[in-house]
Length: 196
Length: 203
Image 1 (tube, rainbow over the protein chains, first blue to last red):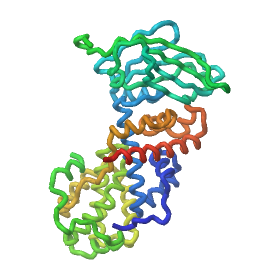
Image 2 (cartoon, one colour):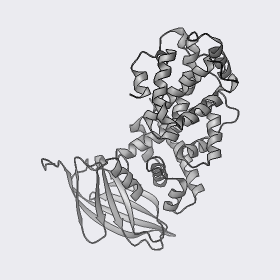
Image 3 (tube, rainbow over the protein chains, first blue to last red):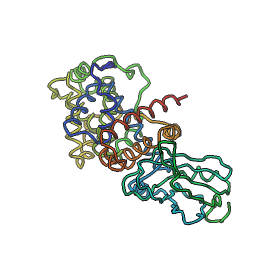
Image 4 (tube, each protein chain N blue to C red):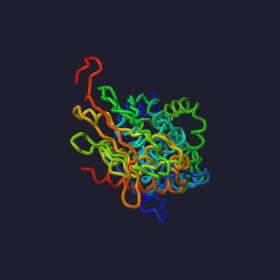
């Protein structure tokens, strides 16, 4: 094996930017020229590519819990991921369930986010057990909803139960509640048999 | 049939001493191939392939955005490289890496001709039984899922937007209300943490 100790490594940050497509053409050329003469940095690039591929695989299978954007939902739809959507606008209890062929469940959480830069979204069962917490979710001026995505496989494990979603914003003395929503989760169903 | 399928269909890695990684420099390896009669430097040719095929494949993934085409590119570039070495047409063997990169750039830009050329070279030089599909590093998906969820929500979202939705740093910055620089720093730190977590999860 040659070139086992690179005297001038590219650095993982540049490798990531290269793979993400955020470098200029001359910067890309420089990275490529180095990688083709340096086995160490080629391994760093291979590591970044493997991680990127794994992240895409996790997302493509709907195996994540995160705030998403319409761009992500569009990509998921193009990849054939089955997304079930519920809208939470505070007008009453939202009946919900998860079906056997769902991949991802998305809650469109609508609220008045005026004057808020970031929020936390906490999901609890009627028992008080917390099943999801998203902290420091950025809110843009004029934003009217947050798309909270949860793996359907995770939700299928839940029994029928009432679910409470609370959105809070940080303030000097702690946090204030912006909105609360209630869902009546009927459990997991098989579409064909209609059975749980 | 892709190059990967072609490569995978034959016995590619011989269990003999001459397939063990050689310790010579890239330049010496290239010189050995160039100096030997055609077919007489099979160990050196295999080693050259082992060292560079995955780099060409990464180049192909980056620019062609397609696994099969990237595999094809890796196969074809190394075939062309060995052809040129055997013909004495590589002027500076010490810069074999740069030669392979240049060849990758040229061939990636002319992808419509690749399949035909590969078939002709394979027949002409009888080298198809020397090569394996490029080694591809992989990450356990279960570990990746678990480690992804151990990250802060914003970092997780940056990684998914970048590597799944294929959004640029500036596009993500617009979504998050921060600068592109902040996104890039957060992204590489998050990927570094993910890497450490996944490596720590290995048995």
